Structure formats: C-alpha cells, structure tokens
Image (tube, rainbow, N blue to C red; front, side):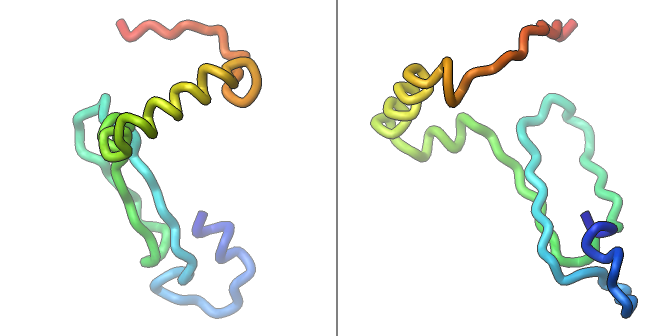
Length: 89
C-alpha cells in the first residue's frame, strides 16, 4: 500500500505517507504472534474482528433479519460458485 501511495512523491519523508491504512485480522486459527513489517509509514491501525462477538452486540432481532436476508438472497447477492472442499486435517 505504502509503495503505491508514495511512488510519485518527490520529497522523501522518514515517516512515510500521511494516508491512513487499516488492517483487520479475522479470527485466530494460528495462535502465534502477528508480525508486522513496518514499511507502511506511521498512519495506520490494526484491529481484530470476530463475527460472533459482533453479532452478539447487534441483538437478536437484527441478527434474525440478517439471516432472513441471506436466506432470501442465497442465489443472488450471496451466491457463490466455489465448489472445492478443503479439509482441516
């Protein structure tokens, strides 16, 4: 990201660009440390996200409406052509 943002910058800054970059970490199958190579400037943030925690904050009526929408649009908006099964062994 940082390389694309700064490719045509004429004046070098040790702090990189001032464009904010945000990364989200979804789930945690690998319980090892998360290592960030800090070559993306100083305007950035990292956040964790778990679906079930987020759904728990929305309330049962909202979650019910969301599930209903997915069920109704399973062959259109939420359709997928992915057919490969990946085993976790």
